[in-house]
Amino acid sequence: MQHPPPTSRAWTITGRGLPPSVLDLIERPTPTLPPHPLPSDVPQPEEWILIRIAYASLNPGAIFQMTLIPQRFRKAPFNVPEMDLSGTVVDVWHPDPTGPLKNETEGETPFGPGAPQRFNKGDGVCAMLPASHLLPTGTGALAEYAAIPARYAVPKPANVSFADSAALLAALTAHRMVVESGAKAGDSVLVIAASGGIGTMAVQMLRHVVGHLGRVVGVCSGKNSDMVKSLGADEIVDYTLHKSLPRFLARTYEKTPFNAVLDTLGFQDVYKASPAFLVEGGIYESVGIKPPTFWFPDFVRAVWTMKLNEWWPMSPWLGGVGRKWGACNMMSPSLAEREAVVGLMERGVIRVVRDSVWEFEQAREAYDKLAGRHAAGKVLVRVDPNVSEDAC
Image (cartoon, rainbow, N blue to C red):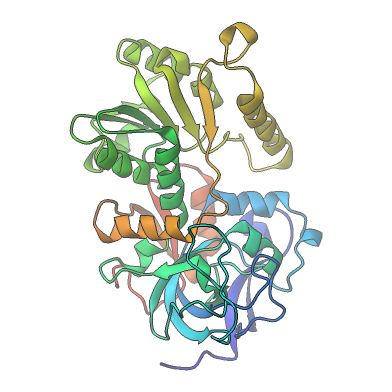
């Protein structure tokens, strides 16, 4: 295996704004191991890996980070966006094995000097970097090389491509939404934005959970209906055919209500109408509230609405909607959760639906596609031109 070059390319955030205006492709020193100083999220010595990145997956949260966070709060010398990546380990640093073993979270894999080494040079890996690491260190997925704590990575299954294994965040979010919704065998579940990156994962996971006696209904545009059905949806609601989606859902499913609703984009008007098509005691699980734009005032209004959904009384008599609203927070998934969703990929329970794959130099154009919010599946960036879309 070749040694990493002294310099390599990365997309960096140069200011506050939309991706086309604030992203700059630069040449920078290639990260080295061990990192110094250790970051606040991983303050004690433990295993670190240097990855030659093959693919990165784009997420709407990165656009919000670019438009909302002033540059003065980005303290790292190079601020690289995105949380999702796949690639090959080119270097490993492991602390003195005689040191003390520590376990950061009960039930987690132990980290620290006493823990066994998890990775070796040449291993294929996929990783999801939490915001607690990405923002203060500036380490993101849109770079040719990244040095990261091994706790954020899992081995890439031999039967899963580098491209697909880069889409961890969507799979992790869908997985937690399904768990928090309480969906079980035989249930009827509605998935809103079923053709998106999270929605396509949620449909497949729900099909697996509710079984052949359950019902999965997906909301998407008619052009994506065949694709969503192929993932396991029993019925499709084409939102483009209805002037008011909430009224249509209320009228159509009032007598056969759902046990849970998974809103993978965040529509407040659908939640407000949910008592008409969601059973009493059912959970409306959402990724949040969809702001009309990526700018600060709309974001603040969306956050305030989310808090009202969480705090306001459940009783309609007191002004509440009357159904529990759950907000899925996937900023710090555990290693066990990462391993669980990669296991689902390895066993063929879920597959990644790719909207499009862009070359590394086209990252700005890829973000334009994502910002339109009509991507059918995941928007991916091929960082390493030598790794084909189906290479495993």
